[in-house]
Amino acid sequence: MSSTSAGRYTRLLSEELAPWLLSEGYQVSPSRSGDDDELRFSARVPSFPQLTKVIDIFVEPLRDWMGLSAFARVVSSEAGEVIGGLPESAQLSDWADPRAELGLVELDGFDSLITMGPYGAFALLDEASVPGSVERVLEGVNGAVGEWFSQRDDVTKLLGLAKYPTRPSVDQEIPNAKRLRATVVLCLLTDRFGDAAGLMGWYLGTGRFSVFDSFDRASEFDGALRERFPGYAEARALIG
Image (cartoon, rainbow, N blue to C red; front, side, top):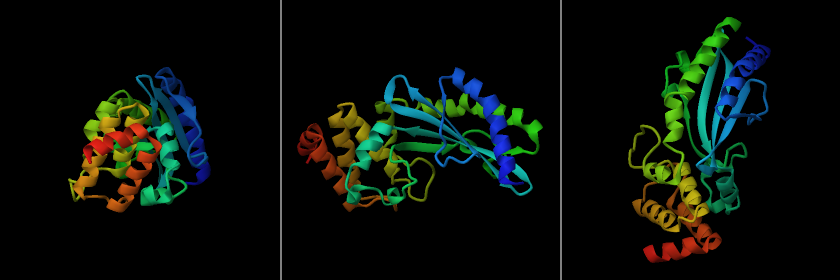
């Protein structure tokens, strides 16, 4: 099946999904790539305006059928602006990729939250499959995916998750560096300097970092935030 087929399915999906998601407060947003085989819907979190919920939907050829996959993201453009303004030495190594979302707090695939199908995708065998795929996406949004979003809709909840990996991994002691760093910045943007300082002090003290981070990079991140946020510098000085 060709990319033309993917574009046709994407248009059909958009026609059926958009009204439902708009009624839930989502808006149609430009896809990250601009390709016609992607859809993006986003909604601000009313209780935490620095956060945006994002649903990304992709249609792609899989063997002799088209597959629909979907991802849930929590994004903060405000945190992204802060992180993007820090020195390169303070960045995670994979954020050198210009396609990376600096404001990404966390993401997960629908397939890890609900049953999607082979290869983690819902099978689009023909145009008659579109309504079923729409029902599957909405099942997630109204169920497990919606619950995933609700577990991340304020700073206190993010602080509760920040010290843990986002999914099973070889080393269960290493937190997700993107989520942890974004949580630190979100604390600073909401004047929770003590929480930010405590989390960052704990992180540096663990000595355990993912392949995208290191003690040196995390220390540079810490130092850059001290320069940017005096309240954070004071809180970190108290911790030592």
